[in-house]
Length: 145
Image 1 (spheres, rainbow, N blue to C red):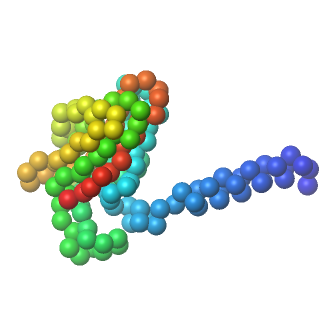
Image 2: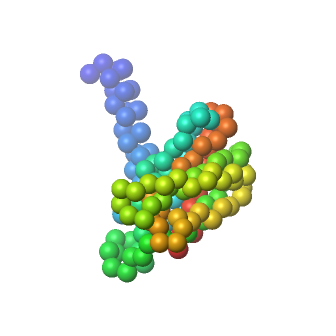
Image 3: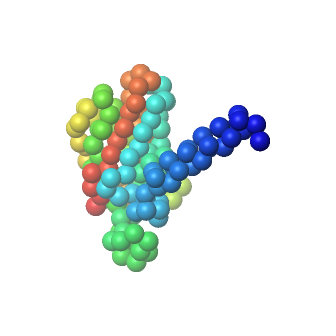
């Protein structure tokens, strides 16, 4: 095999090994939990769905990983802006599946926290993230209830 092919295979193997190291056992069930992170490098005018890219399913809080019993609708998610500059977050909620309402945009300064709520009788479907410039934007889940 030519040396260039071996180099490419070795690089691919290292990338695969890195992906395995980044795998989070607790995040495997796809549900939102403390420590989950949503990162974006999109331009300032683009929003990222944190429910799809980082946080997981925001609709319910469950007592243990993989448990289907005892799950309750999410009342609040506390997030910390773990990026270098202010970001803007929006809650997407609704009374039932298929209904999507967008809450007001909330500014969260670097290192600050915000409590995001879907509203009484509503399900929390998503949290969107956007921020100034192309630089990294990051939210970390602090707690869920």
